[in-house]
Image 1 (cartoon, helix red, strand yellow):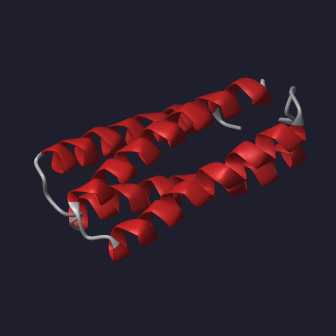
Image 2 (cartoon, rainbow, N blue to C red):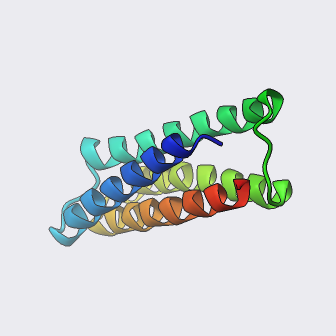
Length: 118
């Protein structure tokens, strides 16, 4: 796992969470910006999957439990995808609040993955 990329993912997730929370509190439905921010978080997590596959092959092996790391990564990737579908179906302001919670959750889970990796 690359530390700077993990911090980038955490920062983008937090920015997306704040943006979605502001839109939700302003009682706006999900729009291109909130959906795009959530999609960007999902893309960063897909890149993290690739990094996590390649890193052990280059000698950067995890220090902690690999199964725990991969479960965090799989669930973290599933969250923005599921929330994105939720926001497409439920076009109310509450969908933006769900996207905000997902952004916060991904940030925390990414930090935990960084700690597990070592």
